[in-house]
Image 1 (cartoon, rainbow, N blue to C red):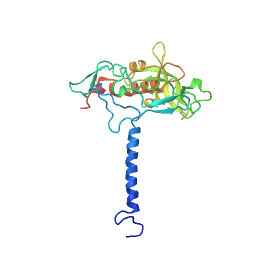
Image 2 (image 1 turned 45 degrees about the horizontal axis):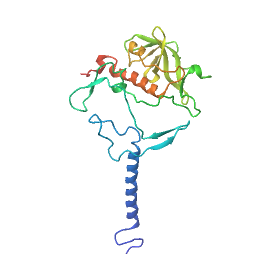
Image 3 (image 1 turned 30 degrees about the vertical axis):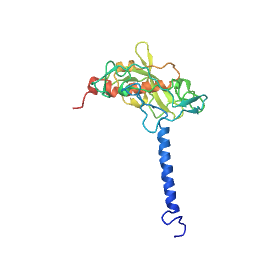
Length: 256
């Protein structure tokens, strides 16, 4: 028998290899199960009695301590009671949905958003992560960059939808996240994601190609003038981004 062998055909290296396979299979099982702490079981249109969770099943609830106090358990029952303003495109289950109203306002397709916590994202110091410059002392726009405040905002139809009156800044990564517009005769405040806006230095204006001026004025608002919640962020970003498909009838038609 060779030196180091346990039997004539099994040695230490082979046992270690088998042990690694068992460990790796267990790791895959564990990670796949932990991945189901949010979003599972899936909602099925087949029947309210059908539980769609796949294999492995949803793990038992675990409690997590939040950095700013409190706790949350996952998985947890997730209910969404929002009415679906859409009809099925066919008689079969799983067919595409056809909007029955304004899909941008009804949060359908690319305009859909999750019902996240209706509280602002916080920094390590417990301050709202995103806030307007008017509440942030010492924050200014770099001299080499254009200041959008006071500029007119033009939609994809070439019509002015409002005027930039304030900038909302990310405290952790100092950059502009939203442009606050004054729209309509009453000057209602609307936030436009900076990632969907282009500042035209030459014409001194801001262009938002995803929506029309009217849709800009009808955008979802926020409850507070000094902070934005995670749910409000998701809804606003989804609304403006969905305009690339829903802003005009031509955008939702086939290219050919």
